[in-house]
Amino acid sequence: MANILLIDSDGKLRDRTIHFFTGSGHKIEGVDDFNRALDFIQKQPLDVVISDVHVPGGNILSLLRSIRERDSEIMLIVTSPIEEVSSVIQAIKEGAFDFVRKPFNQGELYVKVEKALEIRHLSLEAQHLRGQQNLIYKTHEVIGESPHFREVLTVIEKVSMSDSSVIVLGETGTGKELIAGLIHYNSLRAGKAFVRVNCAALPDDLLESELFGHEKGAFTGAEKLRIGRFEQADGGTIFLDEIADMSLKTQAKVLRVLQEQTFERLGSSRTKQVNVRVISATNKILEDEISTGNFRQDLFYRLNVIRLDLPPLRERREDILKLTRFFMLRYSTKMNKKIHKIHLLAEEKLLAYNWPGNIRELENIVERAIIMAVEEISPEDIYLPSDRKTASSPPVEFFIPQEGVSLEDIEKKAILQALEKCLWVQKDAARLLKISPRTLNYKISKHNIGYDGWKKNL
Ligand SMILES: Nc1ncnc2c1ncn2[C@@H]1O[C@H](COP(=O)(O)OP(=O)(O)OP(=O)(O)O)[C@@H](O)[C@H]1O
Ligand SMILES: [Mg+2]
Image 1 (cartoon, helix red, strand yellow):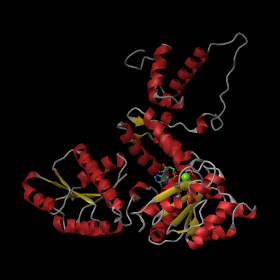
Image 2 (cartoon, protein in one colour; image 1 turned 90 degrees about the horizontal axis):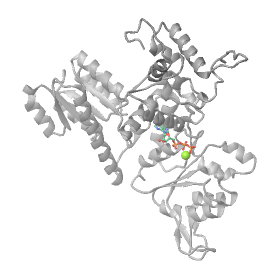
Image 3 (tube, rainbow, N blue to C red; image 1 turned 180 degrees about the vertical axis):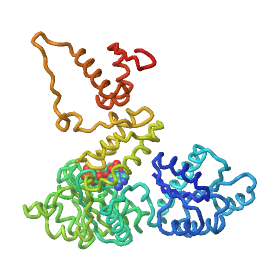
Image 4 (cartoon, helix red, strand yellow; image 1 turned 90 degrees about the vertical axis):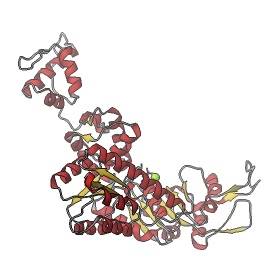
């Protein structure tokens, strides 16, 4: 999802364009004059600006300069009728990205916007590699507008520039790793390594040598010298994921790195000095681990200089559909399928669910829905774990006679009842039966169900 600003005095064109881009999963705002545009550019994060060459209340070149001042990587696309081509050429010379001739069709504009986003992305990536990027890196990949989540983002912006330790807490799938990366890539350390260690994935001895390295022959099997993750992260950031799963012995060594920035490789007495920022994460309640003696309190204090509590998805329901749109775009692009729409009932289904697996679970469900969907995501394409149980739907009562009954007859009867109830509108009946209209249509012909009102008697 990209943030787009559209500047055009033609209200109808604005509405049409906004409708089109919103439907494609982008966030787009429209304004009709220069001053409103400037105000917007100052306050809101933006990826692309689409502007008519004639900006009421100002001109395209001063608009371009204001955009450059805000963020030199915002892409400007100029729209203009053919007669105004000289102003357009001037704008392109001064750095506008591209031009679309008016009147345009939305598809044409869409292609240019996607191209602009691609170039912007590459350019930010290149800046990151050179370690020059500022606070905007990758924020377009982090979706969230709920007040609690915005608060978290504000804190991130502040802590990015410091070297303090950060602990990210939250249930599984709430985005702890994503946030850790965001902090690193927006910090002054961005040009150096971001090293991730999953403390739960390795047995204790291996974890120690993973973190601190070992000399050749330090223990049986240590055939070669190994540079540890702390050394690899020198100058950058180490992300200690699942920190609660670290043994007390390893905790003591990590504490020392935090206090003195020193450690020794296993099997060596030479003390090494590193300059590493530590970001840690866990989905356990660390206070409980401390009271049961599984986690060192002094280490907790060191890690917990800045604490970010990521809210579970069920507490930020206003973000569910935004995240859905974001993942729809991600997976439809990846799978090369043009699925930009989602049925209202499918949205309702997503909104009503409790999301124990949080954003990761939503991502997986949207990915599956994109695979299943034809043209748009229907309620049947959204397959939630609760669909497996019928717990939330009322129990279906029916009577099986002594001599038995064929399942086919039960199916036919259910279809007839649903059709009658929906006045023979197949689409509505399909919804009642929780199947797709296509499946219903197939079953109607299979059971030879006919109705005079249908043009074609099936
Ligand atoms: N705010 C967000 N916007 C967009 N995508 C998100 C957001 N938060 C998380 N994601 C995506 O959700 C998935 C899970 O996120 P992540 O791996 O960071 O969660 P986690 O808290 O580390 O989970 P776990 O505790 O299971 O390790 C990732 O694909 C991530 O990109
Ligand atoms: Mg994780």
